[in-house]
Figure (tube, rainbow, N blue to C red):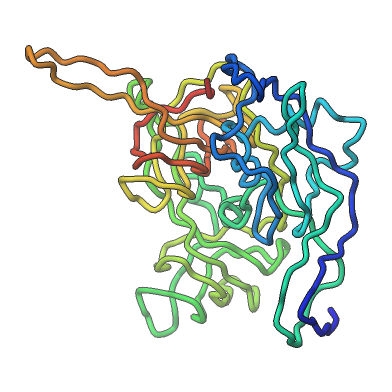
Length: 357
């Protein structure tokens, strides 16, 4: 860390990695020829240039230029020789849309943006970090938690007995007593409670697993037949009888959004937090997992199936309507967790998810 005084004009200076994310988009910009199926389409209101700012992600930038933002790997793949690090773009970089006789291409400009700031003292970290692929802050709390368990999987985990004053509800700052806490697995533990069964609506409500509800974190103070721990963080009420699971290492995968290269037909079976209508940045559960070929980074489209009653009284099924996109970020054998990245209208449990058209 170091102190730095900013003047009226601060030009962002960062280590430049030679990155060109470019491709021929097969769009005849002069004749207005309709884009064929399978080609990469630009947004209708696509900008000519865009300055990267703090908080941007590769996904959000791609969404400004492309109708299908997950297809950015196709753009990058056509320029492997020029790209030194396809995931490193810095705040202050300028992305330019160039139109040529052959079509259109995206690339990083050699310019650097100048940002006006008021004079002040501030503390900033040495070095500059590139933007992430997706908004990792939205999913980070879900990356280390079990979330899906087998029936009775928590039955042998360390058990919360309670407090010395017999309080029922426990929260941050409380000292609590634990039975069967091992002394050789570290001091950091997470608190869980067994939740509802996750059932497959497309397979006679077959149980796919059981949800484990994350409640908070504790730190061990001593080890004994009955050990003492302190609650360091709580997101829900912690109760006597809840269980502990050892905290995993703090790792964060670098998700590369991409569509599956095979057909996926699934459903939303649950939403984290128990709400009935789902919007952007919500965490949802899908009834497809490793056994179905899903992997971290897969992008799926959400479709709504609707019916109407015709004037003659007959129920008519309407064409499926695409209403959003999700990014799969954690995959279990039979289920997956995904982040809603786009929503054109309220999304509901049992809406369909498919490989994007």
